[in-house]
Length: 383
Length: 130
Image (cartoon, rainbow over all chains, first blue to last red; front, side):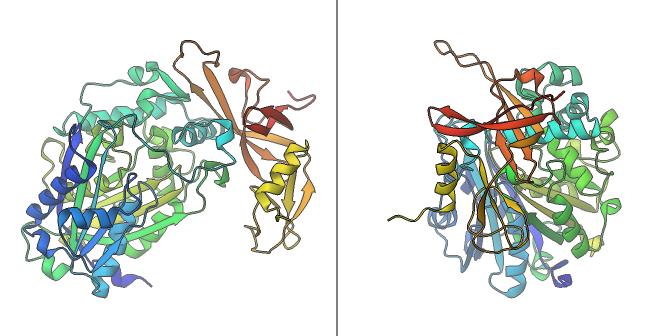
């Protein structure tokens, strides 16, 4: 059905900027620096960009503000905002737009200064009005409820949740760009301040500044550029609710559908994936997504991650940059899954490089377990 | 005269001490939150019917606040999701139960509680519940 999109575009440039703290700089400033780095990486310039994809939490019209700041006049723009998963949807949409000839060079970018502008955050305008009278704290309420239900239904333990944070820290220790690199043990996670039972501070992602950019183009042009192309092999998205109280089953995310759609398009399955980038806003996310993406049966995610299996040296590399838990988390993390996957598939990941990966699965979560998007990427050997 | 939409109708009922839900004649589903179309079958004009108020705790999470000087806010704040006997799920609280005593799967009974922000639906442990 959508076979035409497999290999229909490639990531040719990635960049980051303002990771951690970028005091004094605006969202648009650090985003522009990330864009510059991604275009340099590709050997392209701003003049080449004619497709623009943006989402953030600070702008109602992020693409308009971005094109104005960058001084570009793209002929195709898309500001679809479904939360932190937006950028994976953008990769799928950009592939469509490139194939349709709506643009020739698509730029996906994001920036946020959550850390240095702390206290000036404006809550989302459309909070669920039947939840807010009970004073839930977003977004963590959703993930704490999901974790508690998973624990009650499947016997998942807090120590198993902690395994996810410890694995992320293990990867972060090898990433010079990671915000938190000090050693972290299961005991450290369990003993950290309880924030939203059953989640401690170390079950929760960082709150940082940061920007990321990804450049995509059609395969013919990609092969003429500076770096080995990282091909788009498949993508899918799924959603059934905005509010967590409207989610049919808190232990099963719409990832089941987004993943199946991505696998179907790529003609690949979980057994074919060499590394995973799973949006880890909270430790429970990784457990849910491993299950929902078919790496283990539903309910077995906690046991699956035991023994350092998803950390350095484990047999299923997950979040090799340190993830939202230890690398960076400027409110929306999705774009960083694409960036790390591209660097790994090119063999540019330094001390944390996975041995010669050919495929990578990137997964983004949006809202409060509200939206899920999956993208499968591969090297030229996978075409 | 101003028309009363689904949200206002729900709140008027709650203000009168009634927990009522919408019911779809098309597919027989109960609906929450209130809407003009049934989210299960798309049929229009769901009708208001009394709810039993009986439900089961589906999940719970407990916010641990940093203590704030000069306030008498409790340092924990438990939130629950309750599955109503009729089918819909809603976010709520169990004001009379200590956070540590809330169990997933416990039977609960809804009631209307007055708060500063207006009347809201909360739950108590059901009579005879373990």
